Image 1 (cartoon, rainbow, N blue to C red):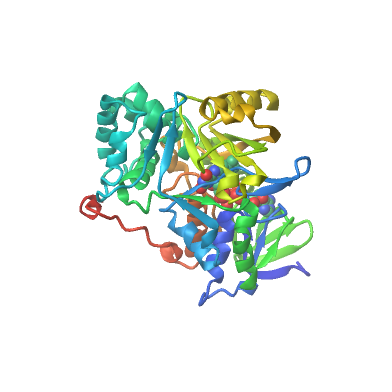
Image 2: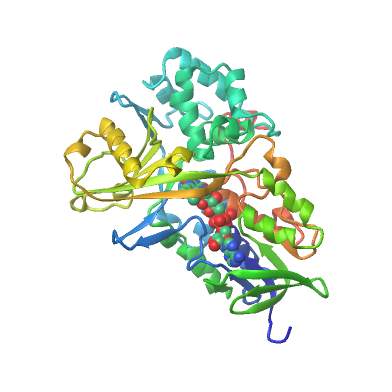
Length: 466
Ligand SMILES: Cc1cc2nc3c(=O)[nH]c(=O)nc-3n(C[C@H](O)[C@H](O)[C@H](O)COP(=O)(O)OP(=O)(O)OC[C@H]3O[C@@H](n4cnc5c(N)ncnc54)[C@H](O)[C@@H]3O)c2cc1C
């Protein structure tokens, strides 16, 4: 087509997967010049689901809290490349709070991995002796790693390893539902095992909790700037409206404002949209049909601004409540005490909340919060917001691996990226970055070429890890 812009690579979708793919291909010494890569996204900023936005009525920038672990080596590497690693605040300890005032603190102690959390675990008031014995017996199953097959559900695993009701409620559930965003029946033991292996056993560094110290779009901006500094043509508010194969194994990508012709397309949009796009390609229907096995799961976040300090922790797990995690964003962002408290409460797998109104969710959240932090009752709630993300993540349902496509497709020059593709990771930013790097590697003929090394196991774990 005359007037079409010629490119070597067009990346469709500038979430973390697409951004990571463009950054991999344009990095120093790469064979593809940044100037011949275009990233298109229909939104006004890159970052996809990891976004923040100025709330017009509240005069605040709002996002849904995202956290990472120390084992997210690819995501951390991107921030290091962009010179922005110091925008991640790292925490070694986790607090689990009960409504009766009990506080459990899990943190690495003097013992080597995998026993580094043992001392704090033995002291944990949230579990009795029989619960602890069950948890220890369960964790032993993940010492060497996690199952290669994703056939078993975590619900079955909990029964098989005879976990107590209290251990399920106070340990397995907050971690699994928080990390995998679905109930036990919809999570495979493989991915639950991966979370426990990395968070509690492999090394103290792998299990560290990282929290962005900035609103998400601001936090991710250095990655966009890095791509642009390498010459990548980043086009926001530019959605792809058509994709077709043209002569010479090339592709035509149509948007409302421009047409591109390119040898390579990296399709880095979510599974639902990819399904619609592949279905229209010759021979695409059977591949697209496999995507019916994906389920999207919701997360609801409640944002509260109080006129004074109401909480003495940066983050915590709340037990026996609908709210699962709290993040004191005013502390994480180091606001002066005089600015009051900005709290975000997170409800994972929040299907019931999708059907509830804002006022109902807010009232229940405030009631639950006051059970843990009585100062909430006397502080003035200055403003509040409820954010429902109906399609926050995909669920790692048992057997899903068979339907997660690799980044290389049967069509020459067409690659897939996105947290939902085959990465060996659940629906996370790290999974998205790995998928983008794998797609870039596939394009260059060596899938693993751009992946960062895993963190080494420490203590006695090198003797145990498969
Ligand atoms: C509420 C919430 C909480 C979360 N919490 C965490 C967490 O704590 N830790 C964690 O690691 N992960 C978390 N996640 C998941 C994480 O955000 C995702 O796994 C990750 O951002 C997915 O990135 P992606 O690039 O694969 O997809 P996306 O971010 O969905 O990117 C796809 C991009 O494609 C663009 N696009 C779609 N169609 C077109 C088109 N036709 N043309 C051009 N562009 C198009 C979209 O605008 C989007 O930017 C959370 C997600 C949500 C929503």
